[in-house]
Each structure stands twice: as structure tokens, then as C-alpha cells.
Length: 229
Length: 109
Image (cartoon, rainbow over all chains, first blue to last red; front, top):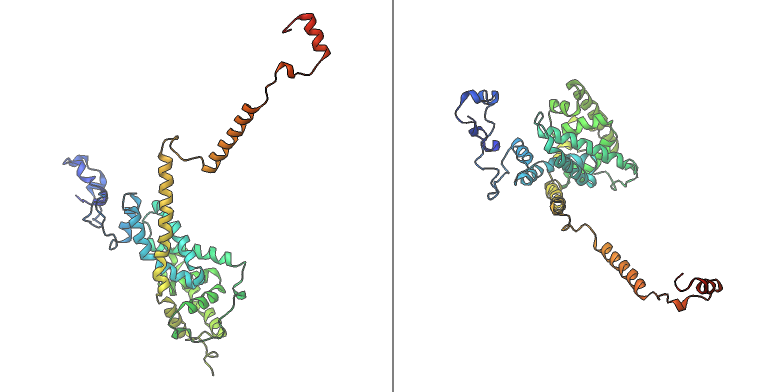
């Protein structure tokens, strides 16, 4: 019998009558994880930082005393990468707005999240949508009207990469949205082609093609604007 | 050829992306910046939920300014009611028709 604190000890309530067992109990799934902390014990605060995403989502969905703690661990774990992606897609100045949009959406939608896909896949889809909204809002104030740095310089040698991300965001903005999304997920978030295909809903070959075309266009653009390593 | 005229190749592009991926302080602080505001929002939501769970007569549903305005209006109405000059029979204007009815039908016609 699988006994997991996440199930609140329900399995032990069935007693020792095999004919009363449900199909799930007759053919139990392999135990995903075991935890030593009882989740409905409000007098004890477990350290959730080492828990995997799936377990944290379950804790959040139980609406128990550690629900917000689980959400905060998820934010702490994933916000840096969402910020990094956003800074290179919409510019460092708007990245915090995107992070806020993403995690407000996560907080309100996590209750209904089903673990059919990885949490990171869902997060990246939300992040891309938030970036698209931010870019649409920005379209009223064209990027071209924002002053460029005084002169092109070797950005990769600078200690801070904020300037580089700003330039990269300007360059990515010129690409078609589907190419921009695929390239960003690949080169900035480090996802593999299959994950990108799942997030964007495109075929694997289409994803590769979009990335190749985006890279070619970006090379030309960066050469023209003088951004070289 | 200056560096600005050199063509960006695949290796250079990869180097640029690698540099953009490097975590910086803004990335590291993103979670805490969000959580600071999030905790405030959660606390406000919990306060609202507690207020909603109270009995109706305990809920501070009426803002103080509206309560003050209502009390002031009530005071004005009461003052007007108390201080309004009463209409005594002697204050009525003289009327020939009234006198004729009074004579014919008596007091209280």
C-alpha cells in the first residue's frame, strides 16, 4: 500500500478488506515521492525548497497552510529564468512587468493546472503570451524612437549584460513572432526542440526551420548594427 | 576592417546568446521583487475575506466619510424641525371668508 502524506492517509482508511479496494489501489501507480512532513500540520513549517515542482503544485492545490509557501518556492525557482527570457525579448526595462504578469497568472491558474505537461512548459507558454502583450503595448512607442547607446561597442566584454539584452530585444523585435518565440526558447531559455514544439504547438521540423531562419536574419541584422563579439 | 564591419557568424551569435543568458543581479532579484508585492496582495485578500465572513452588523461596510455625511444631514433635518416657527392661530392671515364661515358655523367648522 502506498502511503504518502500527500494523500492525507486516505489509503489506510480502507482497512484490510481486499474486495473493497478500488482499481487504483489494486493497481497502484509507483510511489512518486515520499515526504516526511505531514502537510496538514500547521504547527510545523516544512522546508519546501528541495521539493520538485510536481509536489509543490500538489501542496498549492491542497490550499493548506503551506500553500503560499509552495507558491513562493516555485516563484523563487523560476522567476530568474522568466526574467532572463523577458529581458531579452521585451528589454530589461519591461522584464519585471512580464514576471509580474506571469506569476499573477500562475497564482490564479495553478489551482486548475493538470500535470499533463511539465510546469516549465506551461510557464514558458504564459511567459511568451505576456511578452507578446508587452510588445503590443510597446508598439505605440516604437523602439526606434528610443535613443541608442552612443556607439556600437563590444558588448560581450562588458561586465553587465543588460545593454546586450536591450540590443538583442531590439533585434528580436524585427523578427516574425513565430521565429522570435522559437529562437528565444532555444537560445535564451535553453529548451530542446521537442519542448519548443510542445510550447508553440508547431511540428518539430517547423521549429527547426524557424530557428534557422531566425538565426540567419539575426546575423544579418547584428552585422548591420555593429553588434559583434 | 573594423570590428563593426565584420560579419556575425554562428559562433559569434552563439557567444552573444551565451552572454545574454548569463544570470545577472536583476534576474536573481526578480523573485523577491515580485513576492514583495504578492505578499501585500495576499494579505489584502485575506483581510477582505475575513471581513466578508463576519456578521453583517460587524462589517465595516459603510465608509467613515459616508457615515459622517449621513450624521450631518440628520442633524440639519432635526435642527430645522425643532427650530421651525410653529403656526399659531393668531399668525394666520386675516380672511373675510374665514370670518364668515366662523360666524355661520361656529368654532372649528
